[in-house]
Length: 277
Image 1 (cartoon, helix red, strand yellow):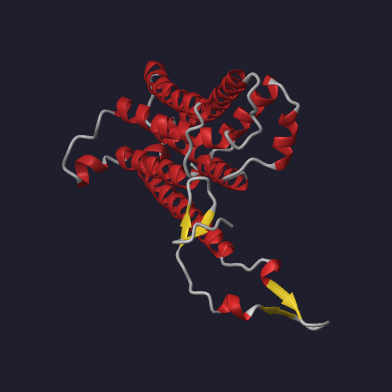
Image 2 (image 1 turned 90 degrees about the horizontal axis):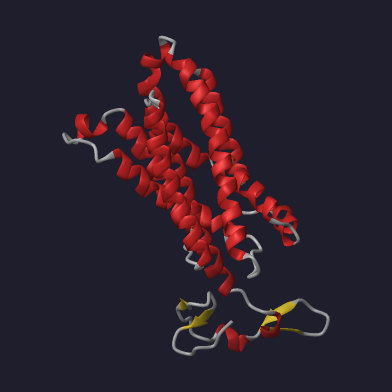
């Protein structure tokens, strides 16, 4: 039990360290890198993808038959491969904070389903699990695509880079699942599995909610920062009097405040005037 929790804790800590971004070192290594480098990046992002791994942990938690494990993991794999490949190739993107917030809710969902929440609290049968896993796989793949689109893909050999990244994701998923299955198999042989299964899946719900708050906080902060930056004055709007301190031009102070409108090309302009900054 404690080993399982320690593994999950390490997944989260490592994942948070790599959350929402591709490091400059990773980007530099891929500028002149080949398909092997993209495979490595795919595996790395899956292994450090704490939210993906927590969801998979919930999916396989009670699965004992190999064919059941293959069935559900295949549904997840097909789902995330579809969105990873097509969203990246056609440059379909969205705020990765919002996508990861939905992924965090998928962790909550699986924990809730594992404790029998639909029957106990909603008085209904839980939705078809294979269909749900496939649907969440699509969302998880979209999240992986947002990471891939942060890399210097270029146009030459684009499809091979995407496919190589996806292969890396699959290899990372296999490695992570292998570790989880070994630990779960050993844990199921002990009496503590029955006693702590409820606590473990309740923990998934709590961790999922914490990750949801974390992602939404990042999204809100990310929205506020550009708006604040748009109000900052450029040096051309300021002048010096002799050797004294910088002063703001009085004509600027008198200008009425106008709403900031975000344009489609991610620029900003003041409403009614169309002056881009």
